[in-house]
Every structure is written in C-alpha cells, then in structure tokens.
Length: 189
Image 1 (cartoon, rainbow, N blue to C red):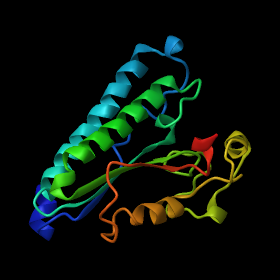
Image 2: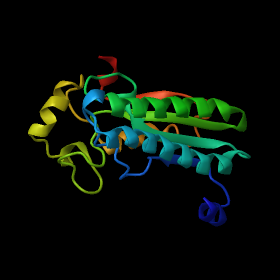
Image 3: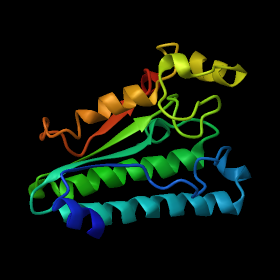
Image 4: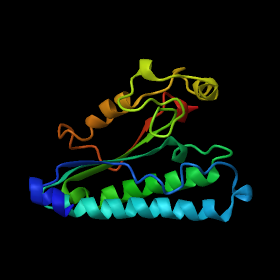
C-alpha cells in the first residue's frame, strides 16, 4: 500500500482475490473425513482476507472508495461434500458485509462477489491469459458443472470482470455490504 500511495497519491478502488497457495481451494469432502490440515486451512484463508482488508481500508478512509472481494457461491448455499470450503467462504462473505457496515460512514463501498461454475484460475481446461467463451476447452470434467448450472454453460473471467466493474468504476457509490452471486443461477436452486 505504501508504494501504491506514494506513486498515485490515493486509492479509489480495489478488487481483491485472497492469495493463492493457502490450500482452501483443494478442500473437498465432508467434515468427518477431513484431515486436520484441511480444518486448519480454512482459518488461514479467513485470516488472509482480514489482512488484505486491513491493508486496503485505511488508504480509503479519508476519501472513500470501492472494494470488491471475490469469494465463492459455495459460501452462499450449503452443499453436501463442501462443508469446510463452504464454511470458509460463508465466513468470508459475512466478514466482508460486517466490515462494510463498519466503514460505510467513511464512504467506503465494500462488497463480495461469489462465483460458482465460472472459469477462473485453477479450472481444468482453462487456457492461459484472457478467457472468452469460445477459448475454453470443455471436457468430461465440465459435464457435472454444466448440469448444475441453470444457464447450461460456464461463466468466464471476462463476464465476471464486466459484472464487477459496476462496483468499482465510481459510478455506483450506493451499494455496500452486499453479497452478489455470479453463478448462472446455481445459487437459486
């Protein structure tokens, strides 16, 4: 944050994706069968979100700003076999909404956008770089995802970015403390 502020003088908007490599993305299965490492990893993920927000919010307290934290729809709707991952994401979504209320008087609009069945980093078949619908190579791995998505297709990073831009471009300074689903209808099943 110090380098950003010294270079640009202020921070108007931030899109945050908690750091990769902290182990939560690979947590699948039930609570009773989860190894201790998986249980410990959900705390690490939640902690990383706290640190990222603590770094960004002070830079916006005097002038306001907009923050979007990318989470997962797995925290919006319980699903068997995803208890630990879903709990980590639900906690993250709750934290973001509560912190948003704590800083609303500062003019900071903080929201969460959770995706499900969108081709993001780490998805099988995801080509490097810019992803559009026609660049994704679907295979057997995609059939269950397509079947559970009412739109019948997977979302793309291009679409997710377009959706999030409205929450970051300064044109909408009234939405705060919200969780937005980007799931092709999955969250409504």
